[in-house]
Length: 312
Image (cartoon, rainbow, N blue to C red; front, side, top):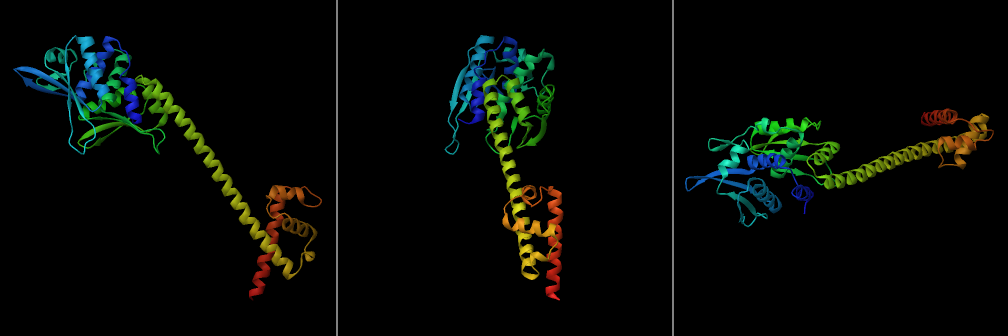
């Protein structure tokens, strides 16, 4: 089961108050519902690929509207792995749709009547229904954090974004495959959204994985930084030793001023240490890192001077 499916499974087990159930159904029907006529009566089909969501819709309709619907399983073609589950309401569809403010003539209304979402909990429930109907979220162990909700209608998509942003989620919108999406990219906002719609366990799992992942990334950055520093030290040390050996071969270290001779001999004796450590090993020391660096720069310059004379 994918991470998104686990989140939806948790959401379908939430017990809700009647008003919140209505808000959730408003989103599920508006986003996944279609209308038809049968025996001169309105027929409502609500379609999903998730059997838990189909059972959720069936249960909410039965518990809060006392209507009997049916679940029809439609097998997909060979290459499609998921079945389609259709919750079909043959009777009382008109009453349910009118109560939820969804029906406009014989079409599903694109705009959400906000007067029916009377408080914060109903808005949260609507967002839960929207996520169940058209939402997906990446597994937090993957390379990028991403949560989105797909909608057929641009105005409805914008309204979902506005609802999300009332809770400071920084939701963005864009068009996608003959429809529209509202999406979140920030890990903290995704966790907040899951908590907002009631997926507490999934949110805690998300946060645990995120913390481990962020810690691993921090460790990797520190290791990379340390490796880069070590490589830099090794490269500088190799150049210093080459220059000191050149001076030794050409004129001898004894020809150098005492301070330069001491640092040259100490570097040859301790080729792997850092400048700071080298400063503690110099006879008559310790000397500061900047003092060590100053003397080594003089040795490097002297070696370059000797090289230039060799090429003349």
